[in-house]
Image (tube, rainbow, N blue to C red; front, side, top):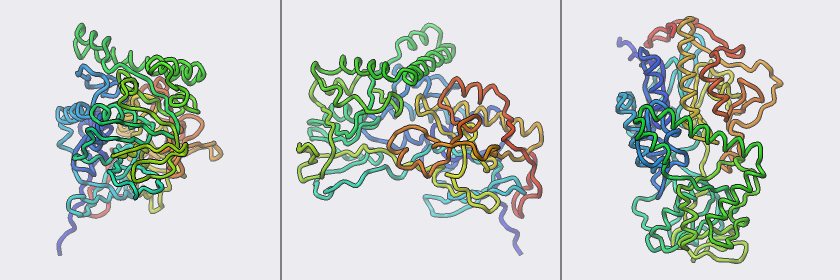
Length: 503
């Protein structure tokens, strides 16, 4: 009789090998080098978003001194950087720290089942390249895959779509062989992707039109941080990096706080900047004056005003209208105008998918995400030993990721010192009011808000978007909390798996 094949056990299983996953692995190695871990990546490459998206002009909309890691200086001249440079930075980070050797490609996590008795997760994994299914166990599951679907973007149902004979492309699935040189391109959308695409396409296309239903706030930002570069030359990369980072964090927080406290003044200031950047007499209020307040949705940054420059030189235009139908020539709008097009780009947003679509169960009971509440923006009520990384929507994503990872490793240290195997957040006040986890007005959030966890109205159940408050909560405050409950494993692991021991 043959004995069962032992199931591999890891101390920490990180799901996703993009910006957040690589960061989580770095902090884990630094603070807990004795722990075993792996990064499971559903795709065939590291880099996440920055490897997936290939549309023209793709870049960051945050400066890389804050969007990059706190532990690794950004060494390029441009602080608003293209995707290829960001990807090179991420992969260099993974290589320098031997994180890439822990990545397992084409590994998609389908389900994870928690056993309180054994204090561990049993994780079902599917190999995307072979179709094989395998099982792992882990003491902690760290979800670092962001919050949108990697396999499909969002495109609304458009009347008459089949009538249009040319290419209709979503930026998330940009064809490598698509040639827009000399052609008329209509980009449907007004968010960060659209304002990136339009000037990039306008450089070679015959003409580009950005067609939007509702305007967005758009602000020019310098592509090059001249003060930061001067400090790097004077002080050297290592000494200048924390100083530049603090300066840029403070600047970003100041702008956000000003917009939150004085929305009318912020709106007028943005309008004044837009007016100066656009041609004399341009209808700014029609095309760049949203019906909502600044930072109710993410503000779109355009490096060196490239979108405005394309409008000024006539290679691009903005049209604010609604689509009636696609036609054989392009798009018919509610105003009666018909936009001629050879190529139509649907920059219409993302589809959200919390935790990569993983099915969670705890002691045999299914976890229903909308019934959970986020704890400190990194765990879920009633779900033990599960951490996740979702960054800021009002500033650089990575600022929050770094703080969450630091708090996670501090939590592991506390558990080591006290011999705990598990911790589980539990809401102490069942009457606590809740609201959506992602509490801002982007269309892709509104479409999927009922599928996501909730957040509360007080700490530790409030998901903060305030970096200064999060530094105190996640970096300096105690990791313990009356609503975070610690425990020890009650029974040995199942046959074929290593026995559970204190972390």
